[in-house]
Length: 294
Image 1 (cartoon, rainbow, N blue to C red):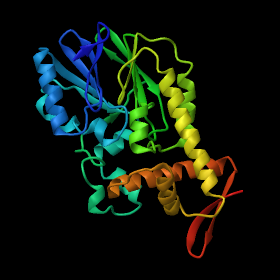
Image 2 (image 1 turned 180 degrees about the vertical axis):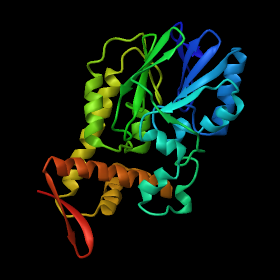
Image 3 (image 1 turned 90 degrees about the vertical axis):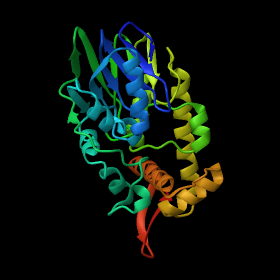
Image 4 (image 1 turned 180 degrees about the horizontal axis):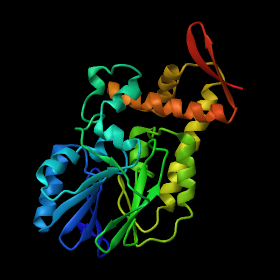
């Protein structure tokens, strides 16, 4: 556990798990991917001679709530699990994510732990701020990456969830997952105007005092993807064809069925944004839904 202020810190890992500490009581921000993540968190908390009393999930992607169930079962003092509205329902019913990715009863390859964490009884956030002893944990709306993602601020430390990703992750995957492109762009631009914090803790990048460079890298990535899609739509294409052509163009390695569906849905998010901007059209041709640049 690394404390970056008197009351706020994080447990580093593939997902940085936020920690709000009031004496021996701890509220976690996210819980990692699975039972192994939960075990590691529980061990760190036990070594600090503390007790977990609450979980605040930022959004309902499995790598952020997958440890909820085990922590809930092994933490006798747990008082609450909160998540933003809609996201809380997905955490209660994890089948929702593979359903909206597949659009029907999902195939087995979409029901693995990367898309379906174990269900836990998350409740919607009760207010824009959550009292915790003498502390106040503020909720910050950060939609785009998911339907209703939020971040949390306490003791001048900002846990900004999956709003920004480092260049290494952008290069590795080639296409950052996004549910709503316009919302994500708005969120990224709004972060340029945030007040100074003692520390900002992204979920998948090292904590730092300033995330301006990360914001610019993520905005640049999104602009590059939009331009690439527009260029490819000089000739009408289906979303599935766009996945293949964009993958070839950008060298995007799709090694699994679940990764393919994440990319397909991200492409659809870009298409929805471009359609709203009235720079592309969509129609049915030869029993295929196709998109084309105006």
